[in-house]
Length: 377
Ligand code: PMV
Image (cartoon, rainbow, N blue to C red; front, side, top):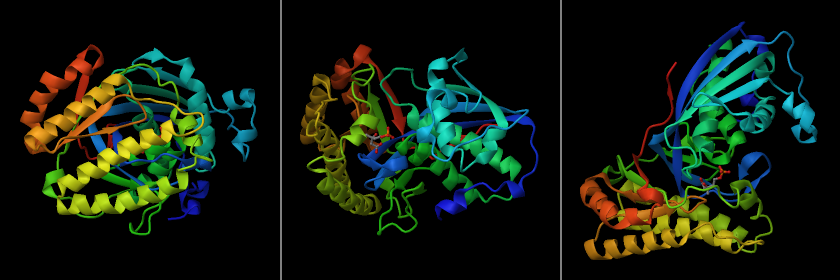
């Protein structure tokens, strides 16, 4: 599927005055990490993630036809702030509270996707959103939030053009979500999603995420992810800044090659059920991501002392019990503890007795692998 296939054609359109759609869309956790991008959120390497289940955003998009449609310029980068803020009339509510501080981010997103879904220029929007995980828990809501909004917009496209296939619907939702936040491209489907063109994965694309099409061994079915909230504060360095620091990074090219190789290795492990190999790739990916941050210029550290305490405890526990517990990290201090479902009882006991002491206010979220976004209305 090429870029041109993803452009909305108004000639096929029905009329639609107003209405609303609601989607519930999950967060995801990368196993092979995306870190480094080109313009328009084109990833420098391929990545793969588990789709989550309990961490999600539910978004209702209400739309009403405008008296006169908006105009859009080709390159939104040249638009000044006034034009940007008047691009669309949209109001955002989080848990029932109006959030003007989100207006600009959503306005920029709507502008970016405008040339692919030109019908949005005809409407004013009210966006009502809710995250299942606490606000400022240190869990990024951009993947679930952007994918939920992209799906609502695709529901408008489907209402205008009912002939659109399910395949195109989901690919384009992932494509639009990617323009909001790169990793959001992996939050449409599940349980495993590959994003980024890779020769060994047929159908993979830089433009959107695709479902991992190889077989998934029993060991990885219903895999568990307990998220330990080590630090709920705002990140000192945003992921946009972090991605940009991969430009001119001395180890960048080697890192991109390594990630693409790890994707092949992890896909073999997932199909064969090789937990040991899975663990070594996942942990190495997490530490490599953070090593890239520590070796960029300017350098930075997002892990906290308690992140390292938890990692060491996990390693001790694994050595002692031969458990298949492992960890991964996002661009932050929180730790995702991954383990097979059949180890749930023993690992949960370990988490409660040994790891919660390192979490802010003992706070954690029990999650597991999920199957992707769902339309609620
Ligand atoms: O989607 P972004 O731009 O917030 O980047 C996310 C990057 C990581 O979460 C660190 C890795 C990944 O692949 O999700």
